[in-house]
Amino acid sequence: MSNFNQLELSRRELLISSAATVVVTGTATGSVAAQLSGDDMRFSTHVAFTVNGDRRELEVDNRTTLLDALRENLHLTGTKKGCDHGQCGACTVMVDGQRINSCLTLAIMHEDCEITTIEGLGQPGNLHPMQAAFVKHDGFQCGYCTPGQICSSVAVLQEIKANIPSHVTGDLIEPAKLTAAEVRERMSGNICRCGAYSNILEAISEVGGIEA
Ligand code: FES
Ligand code: FES
Image (cartoon, rainbow, N blue to C red; front, side):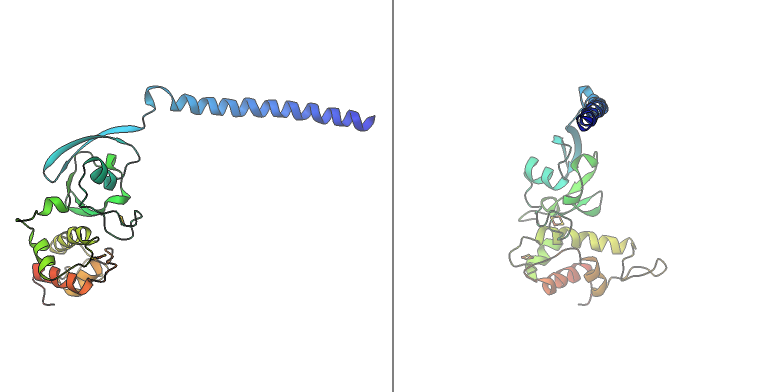
């Protein structure tokens, strides 16, 4: 009998405790719901930026990467999705003159930015010198990494010209050097599974005026 009473007590305590838990949890859930409901709950955002000289306006899911916005929303499929994790460089584009892995940044972070993709560098019949050099030097096999390689190459030469240091340059006192070693280091984020590296370096060297 005494065991039964203890059991009853335990059950009563358990019910009280559960009710309290429900109240607390319910309050917390209600508060989250209050935060996430109403006019403030927005899953998409309007963003406007310039792509290859054209003003583009989009309503995108907040989680859309710049890469997906370019490819899926704007149908600029020259920019490639390789790893989608910032490790291969296939998605490299230039934003306000600086190269960036477009898979690692959200489209809505680039309001009013100037974005340049491979399509904006040049077109058949009017190639950018770097595109022409890649063709001339066979700087690709399958070509999947190539748009990212070319965008990166163009930005690399600009970085060196602007004296932006790299791990090779090493310090902030010596000016950045336009050497093959410097270019190799700066291009190390662009992976080519076909192994066209030596030809890619030849192409960049020609455009940059480096003795290969
Ligand atoms: Fe962006 Fe690989 S797809 S780094
Ligand atoms: Fe095929 Fe680079 S050309 S991955």
